[in-house]
Length: 586
Image 1 (cartoon, one colour):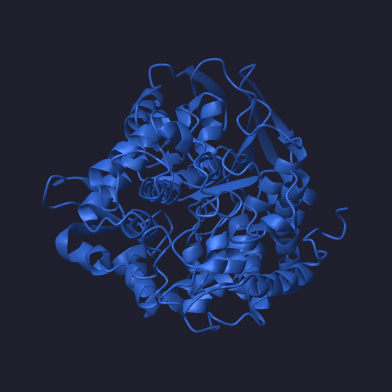
Image 2: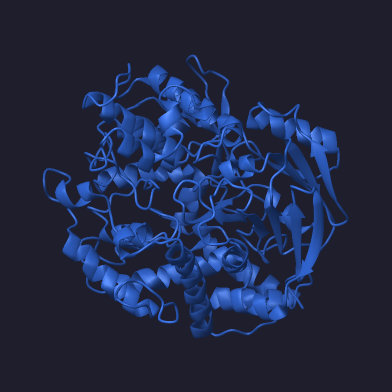
């Protein structure tokens, strides 16, 4: 077997033991690793109705078959579990230096099951699994934890993933962090890790899966490199990273502002990529096997945060704390970015929850000294959330819980319990379909369909034919998450390149139609997981405010009929019934 090891590492944290199982070639050919394998293992190993924070939930780590090869964009790993935030299918991905080293342990997947009675760190290599008492690390921030555990293990080139206080305290949107600033950020994977009392995992090894056709892989890498030369999108990522989106989204009037009540933030220029480059020291920072270098290693050069170094801020963090919370100082957003990374919390959910709390205060539902633009108030609230104190007791449980507690369910913006990223579906209607159908809740990365709508590939306002194009994007990005590749290479890795990559790594010569069928199978697996947990068509929708409150002086809105039209088309093209149930699932 080429491209895979055919090995699954199963670690029992209750008994502090481990075993290695075989993964058959048939399973790997059927699901192609990454998200496909993770979804399959999740369905096989997690029983319906399990409490996501109980011993019975599983936490699955996977580096795809492309990881550890010279393939561009291959330095990402995936994490899969039942989400403590949504109670449904959970997945998250992170870049940085970890994925190639996970691959060197010689396993296609690693499952954590059970839970320890004391804080632990794990050392996973190609020769052993070591369980270490981590009581002395409990309470440390993520940076301190990463430094400490790597020093303890003392293996050159080892890499670590860690949680912060939020994960320890079971905040339902806690992240898993690595390389200080890289995050498996969404759906609460850090809380699952914390529930199992795992503070850190260190990976190292020398294993290497055999590549089926090294020359074919070299040819593919060369062709992608040639395609990137002179490419405007590549240049924009190299220059601005994702901060380029601040200008694009405000000029498109779809930059969520003041808790989703406006589409333009009047101070957006102060938060733009141009301002970041002009006012701070910014250096490009790339993951291994990447020429985009979208990570911007930023050092604040003025004010009270002078000297602060952060990789970022990403567009999503700027929108969440800038647009939604009304903060107009990039240095302050960098500070909040740093605080979230240290605490180990998702900046998208955190910014949404803070803005929701400001709305609750303004509406008289919550008593607190907090308002739009209140930097100190935002900082204090983030600390309260991570430490589960004060208003953080409620907010640590997520948006659905807080909205119900404060009787603001009609105001809260989320899909399936996950808050949307910074693309308003009242302008970008295809993003409405993306949010509604995503198994993990409101998500832009399962298809990155904002690219199609913003670039002129399809009119953002129309609904006819949108589901068909969306599925093409979603299928291709699903294959990205199977290999596992960075979504920012979407313009350079199309269906022919995906076919060539799979063939080069594994020797399996799939046509585009066959790859589309595999992608549909993977998307269906995640859907089946949610159906098994009681989800229905009613959850494949948007927040009520999106249907009732027009944006941009009444010009932009999406209505229920428009969403249902796209949803019906989507279900039909997926081969599901009118309720969104796969035909074989009854």
